[in-house]
Length: 401
Image (tube, rainbow, N blue to C red; front, side):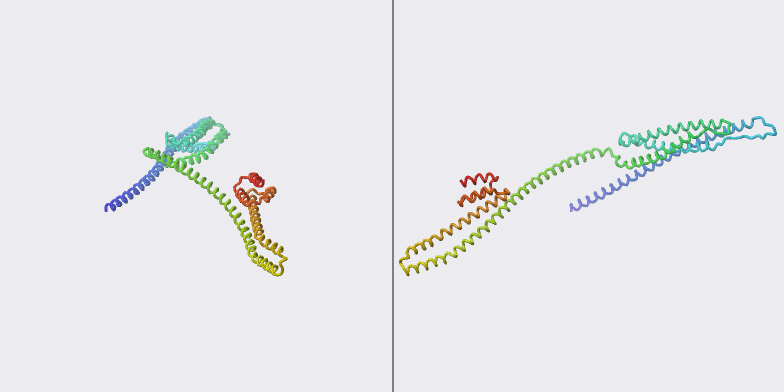
């Protein structure tokens, strides 16, 4: 019963933990959304403020231009009238280039104001002490480039103001040359087009890195402890891996040595099988000789009886035949012994050829001179164990000598 209660409490704790995790994640998403909306509202408010200031400047410029035009008109109206034969005509300059330059300058001023507002908002976040150095350096480069071109635009604005005053003050039908001013304004427009894309990309990267930059102060000790535990675990895994690699290397060395020993044993087994086969052939030959012996002995006995019955003069011949009959087993043993010795010689030559590739003719000749079976057996063992052909040859010379 107590175990059931504990299990129920454990399940409730897990459910509460999951709900808490869900609420924390939802709160984080909501906070991110509110931060984004606050950023957009702040940027829009700064933009509206810049537009208001720009409109105020435009109204002042327009008021100044109207006053100058009114003054010019008044001066032309106060001149003495000419004779009736001459028609009075007042020629005003073409103000269209001036108005186009003023409109371009106004649009560029608005663009620079928007970018300045965006940079000001972004600077409040990036210039914090805990901001990444990479973003701080990138923002400084971006701000330096903007400041340089904005200074050039302010110089163009002053130059435009002087040209405007000159155009409104003179009474001629032509305006000053606006070529240099238009080139400067065009360069500023190109810069704003490229700078806007760069600033937007930089801001996107900054916003994307926000989850990685957020770190609660209370979690720093836990993160350090977790990092230390991970480093310790990594070191332990590296040590285990090194031990396993060493064990694998030792196992491979042992397996290779076992494979070599197995190959040698297989070769010795093949040699012994060949020798066994040869000995079985010799044994079969010996069996055949033994099977033929009773017949030879029976023939010899019949011949001896016939000679004894016919004449006693042939006793010497009978004795010779009996001696031959008694000598037959000794000759058979000699043949078998030579056959076995020849078989051992061949086995020794085969073992030497397999171990050292080639058997010198001198070694073969010395083997033929040895006719003692015990020596041949010792030489066969030596052929299996010797380190080189020279060691075997020296031992063979001692045995042959």
